[in-house]
Amino acid sequence: MNENFTIQLFEGKKIRIVWDAGEEKYYFAVADIVQVLTESADVKQYIKKIRARDLELNSKWGTICTPIEMLAPDGKRHKTNAADMEGIFRIIQSIPSKMSGTVPAFTNQRTSLFLQTFSPKHGAA
Image 1 (cartoon, helix red, strand yellow):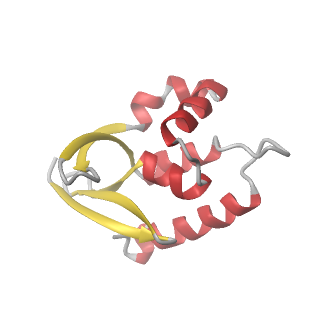
Image 2: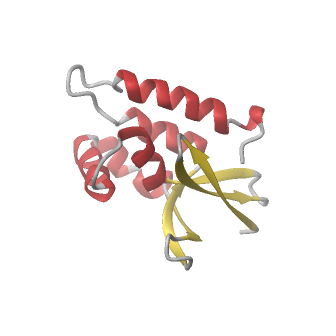
């Protein structure tokens, strides 16, 4: 994988992104996206919970997420679950609302902004 690493700010929070020149697409750190969209205090547990609730997502997790080396907060490169835009969108669909079981309004607004910010049409990263 021919990679270019970058960190983009989205609402003041860092999102790690890798460009795969061979596949010609971006991969986003799943934990970073979930953190930004949910403001969860424990992102790893939040991801475990959405996977437990959404069995289809869980069964396809290995297809949706690819372990990619990214820069960690300690400055070292570590394998991190990452997904392309299609995978990120699928994960976002599994973020529940306490009221209706759908994406909450604030998450929906952030998701729309995220998708606008990082869509290939708008020159992501």
